[in-house]
Image 1: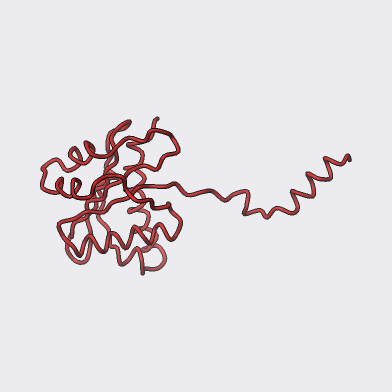
Image 2: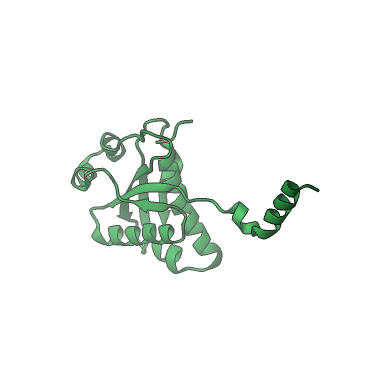
Length: 164
């Protein structure tokens, strides 16, 4: 075996197995808005929690919050927001996601996740009902299900801004 072969084998043994499987989480420009301050606070806490779990890196939004909040009064919230959210200029740019949070009774939240709409139409996964407390403080399958529903909403909105 030559020097290069020994070097390759040595590197293969030195690099931990998990390192090869690690990935960088996507970056999203997330803004949570609501007419209900409690629903907004719970939703923002859940978004922060998902970011802390490294489901994604939360980046400051580049849209004006007061303009997005004005869309709360619009019958077509998604259409209004899509007119404000810029499409990414480069494939590596963070995608914009606006989450409209509303109280759904019994401590539950209703989320509508909206992206730029530049490349794909919205899907049913962008409308979800979940329990933020279960997602943050729950255990086992209940917590996993709540986190999965929230993340599916966010990812589906991000896909609106991704070229097929």
